[in-house]
Image (cartoon, rainbow, N blue to C red; front, side, top):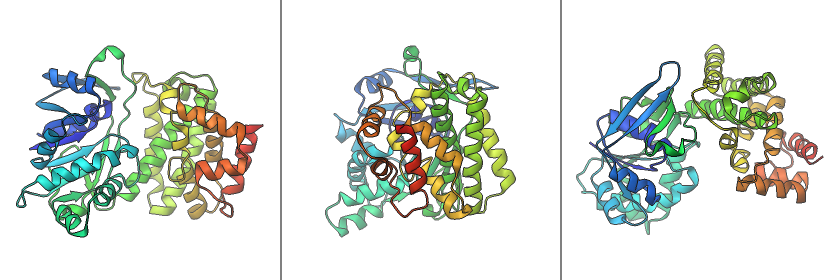
Length: 383
């Protein structure tokens, strides 16, 4: 079996690539980073260091690497004969990945098994987005139908903390021991790919939102609140009582929305969020708050980790979530000159009105229940 994985970075090597290797796939990494691809191509193996209460090291072998910027023909040929295609490139990069996947599908034999395509991104509906980008780039309905018959597009929810790596680690990577890879089984019609490390479910939406609005919301709340308290790492930040309380309060609100929206069990959600908060205390993961907090504009988007669950809280619980609004305020105060979105955010706060900032950044518009509370938060931040 063969898998082509787009994104040879830390998540690609330390999470998706590792699980595909353990499932028996030959993994072909594709990336535009020439230095990284050359290093992988020169290596016979790389180590994944799993750190936690019971740390261990796993070795990945039997992989290859292709520079997708300079050797598209080779990548198309690999996709044409692959069993699985996965991505870990970031949602905004999927539109650049879609055309070469389309070319690979076109090159597949008509009698070949359908290619399983799964985007493993921190976003709701990432595979749907990838499929839409792929189909939109095709010239006509006949071509869309022909290529659509050669692939199965399945959404996923992924979860594993992969911190910034030691510059001297080479292609080795350090990750936490915990992971979750949940895949929507319905598109496969009973013919899911064999990946023991993945969990196939009938309804993916609750798993995606549970992860995004617990792990991502909690992680970002700790990062932004901890940054304001002078903490350097996530484990340092969550050890500060004020920071932990802020995260606990925010996750109680996201849990309430998830329970009301999806019918999840309250006790199970309480145990899940406790587990998530405990993961953030892992002293073996030296994860800087500036890394976790980077790109604040994206994280303050309408469907992302703060505004998304806040909208659901209003809709399904019936009240405005104060702890999530406090986390938004902390995110607005994230001031890191090395982060381009942080710099852009500073300019907006200096030059734009609170009303324009709320609409532009969060997508919340006048008339929505969250609009005025968010305007008040921005006004307070602006002083």
